[in-house]
Length: 265
Image 1 (spheres, one colour):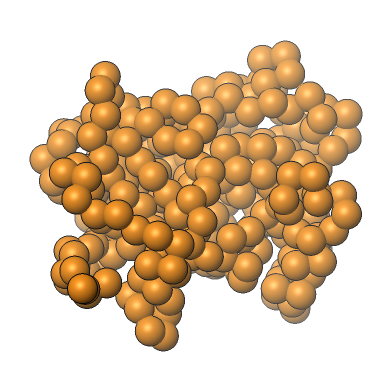
Image 2 (cartoon, rainbow, N blue to C red):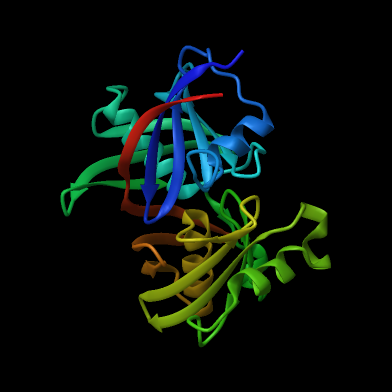
């Protein structure tokens, strides 16, 4: 028997999500249901799906699923969008603390250019490998950074898949891949191939975070703030280096409700 559910569609810099209020725990989605809802031809269409749920001691819990149907690790733009969603539901006012796959996050929501603007505090990032020359960092999700001078002519899906499925990352089930061009000492341009989506997305929050941190370390910056130009919009990332960790890591950008509706699953 099919069930009608209410959903909301959000995007953060073009990274789009189906968002569902599951505080009553009355919605159970299997892998095929998530894949269907995220399908751009037969479903609603999205890079991922999120459930907002109740949890003790914090404002809410965020559960994130990639469009392949599998529950996944942290999504930065998803985290910003779910904060905007929580405000629209009246769960929070201008700040939030919430639980995700990789721990507890906090966020502040304001307004910029007539849109909700969310500053999300990311988890501390282990940069011990980066300090030794690695181009890999886990910012809640695993990310490989590949620097390139010409992004416009790059086949991101082909080049991204080659690295994502390479032997170097088999042990962790593959990695997200970000191609980065340095624009200035405080701005980078990025294109991302996302694991679990298996395609290029318009933006990736954890990828932008990894790219900014690694770019800053390569430039020997202990404290930095970067503008990250995605295919969608500009995101902002800041951090401070403390030994082998990047701390006070913030990802900021717009989070917009696009539409809402109901669908049978």
